[in-house]
Length: 155
Figure (tube, rainbow, N blue to C red):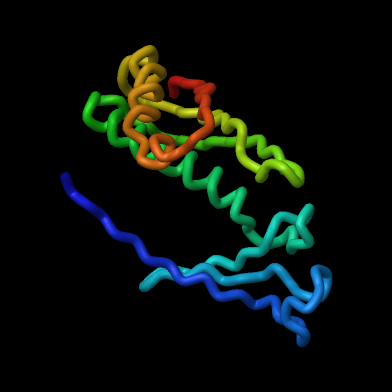
């Protein structure tokens, strides 16, 4: 078994002069960094006083799910002689915020990839989404269901 290690740095940029003295007195902005990568400007969801123009953790989680699935799917297509020309996923997720007794949590995510192929079996191309889901490192680490409603178009 191979083990992989990942390192990121999160730097909060929200001290507006009084630190976290009160809930409304600090910003939620932060930078996500990793060696030799472009910085990601992030904040909390606007529902939690964040900046709507920056990535929030919930969007980043959904993007991770969608990205991992896509990468496995493209790999599987390549080894099965299916030529993918375009791939776009409009993924969605649902999170319940929770209350005083229970922490918030995601309850589902749905991937909606539209895949355009120029060569290969359309039915096989569709079925490879199931295999990609089984192999996805991120999906295998979640405690909520991820559905995939793929569309395959032939060019």
